[in-house]
Length: 268
Image 1 (spheres, helix red, strand yellow):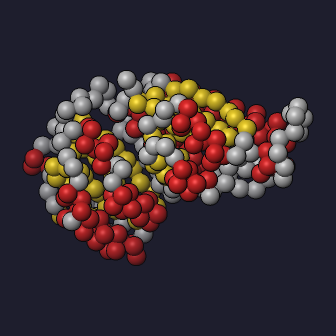
Image 2 (cartoon, helix red, strand yellow):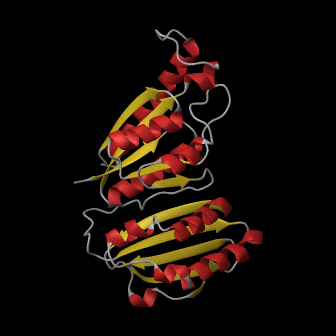
């Protein structure tokens, strides 16, 4: 049975980044995406939704939500990822958690900050509330982080084949040493105890602006389980918070020959 990934959208860049991450995740697991948008009448009008719906501002927000949800469905179809979508009214965090429960979602992938101002569909505090009340694991993606899958994608993942997680981090030079040190300390300490981890490697560019992280897991399931480790989650949050951009890729099978994996400094 395919896993289900719930992706709340609100038309913001942060939510778009989260959708791209979810799309990459769905292609390699594989999984079905359930895209949703929650229009919050109270945030727009200062009161609950009238009945019947006759407020033009709420109707405009609903039309806008229908549009970007439709674009997400088109992107999923183009990537050959199964997806469904719906737009609802209500309090965003409560509606997202309710959708996760009713659809038996395995994961929620969402942005950390939503839109603000007159047209907002959900607020930045929503992610925190979802994290506290969600019935399933939640992956949050910051607005800075730009995550995408390899252009070729990964087809037919063997659940028992080795899998590699690759992240290329662009970071400001003044943050490089601290972030590189924190990643290296984790990889030599708690990271080495993650179930199913085989080995990890970290590279730093000579110009102190790029950090390349490579981790090999014994199986695809080991990698999925590792994502919900609290210590790893804290590190990934630190990485995304301090990154200018972040590229995320997955490879299944032995795509890296032993002589290609070396610790040290990579070219800029």
